[in-house]
Image (cartoon, rainbow, N blue to C red; front, side, top):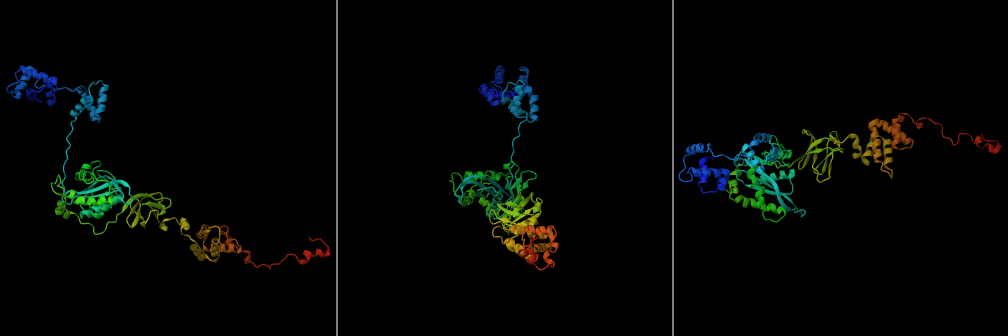
Length: 509
């Protein structure tokens, strides 16, 4: 402030405190210059030019300008400047100065710091789009609504997609923020508009962006497939910068809550979605928009609708991608059902793509390793026997008819042993039969048949007997039945030798 401006305020019959409030000059300085102006006859009449006043001040006061307030922090300028460069907060700077004997207030330090590094005004540039070029999405909390299937009052989320040029919008309420819900909402919005914009601007919510990053965001694979199917580009905002989608930020969930949901009682979500569809056509679509000064629905129907990309001819197969672990039972868990994958991948992380009809399993580098029909209900298992270890499969695929058929293929003796084991009325011998039949893999079918034949001849139809015969090579040895033997006799000794003493009175040796 120059001396001429200060004198104008002094001559306006305002008190010294009033001049201080208007100019920021300390009232003691104002009082000094009021007295000086009175001595020089400057309180009345026209004021001299600025140059003349500066010369008069220099001749009478020794200064060309009024003395300004000197901050109480000035003597600590070097310390404060260094702390500001280091990024120290003002409160911490104040505490540091108090340790060095500074008696002033926090406000004085704050004013001094602001003069050292004055803030640049925050500038916002409005980005205008061409018709059909962009849509912006807002997804946020919308209060509570009634679940018509359970009757419970549940948290509800509002999905709002606004076309950036016309400001025409689509709104739908849902009970969750799952990936499949997010994709289904996009499909509904595009069907509502009858076309697809060139790009969709979104927040970095987990259903769309796996890892938020301004330079290289990691898009959810399912959302990427959705974008490729419909032909739009995904543009995530800079993290924590919602103003980058300002056209939907105030006209999205906030506007829906203030207008459509304002004063509305909790209703079933199905009814709310029917009502909000009408609201989009009437209240929201027919209002005079504050920026465009036109009705959004009119702008949409007359211009933007024809500029949207047509909907794809093929229906969208909503597919969900997840990273899962292959468990020790050779199955992954997806959507509460179980799907097998090759046992060599047990313990590894795999990618699973769940479509409406098929579930495909990939390695992390997208090598397809398994394909299954989508399970019809939770808890169902989809198992490909080729995914299981060969030595573990027998217990799964072996039943009684299968075992008897395999035994018949090996030979009649094997079939006889198997039939005898399965005929046990008290104990289930099916696992034992499975182990017996797997001896074929180790010893061959001919030896197994020979071992069973030997067990039959000895009337010892037991798994351990058959295995003992094979391990010890007894199936190669001929049995006693294979040699010529004398006819069987009742006694080895003669009758006279056996009972002759009864007649002769001699002792029997």
